[in-house]
Length: 110
Image (cartoon, rainbow, N blue to C red; front, side):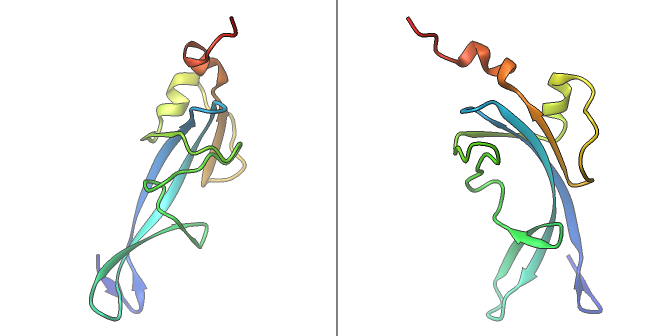
């Protein structure tokens, strides 16, 4: 990464997520910025819509139920399972409901 006129070049990555608790699925795009701190150590910042957010790879949280059992996949995995993706509210986030995909994993009451 190089710094040009005070700006940091960013890499753009997208990930797909599926909550194993409630079945909610979504995709999110991130700008990944590489910086050097004042002590010379490299650090990475994940940015969504101009806001620095925690790394989605460290401990993802379901945006629907706040569950922490979230599967991370490469982008396109959620939409490829469900078929055509509905229009999203903006270019950064896409949302789907995956409860029907989790049916085989859910316990049935005896």
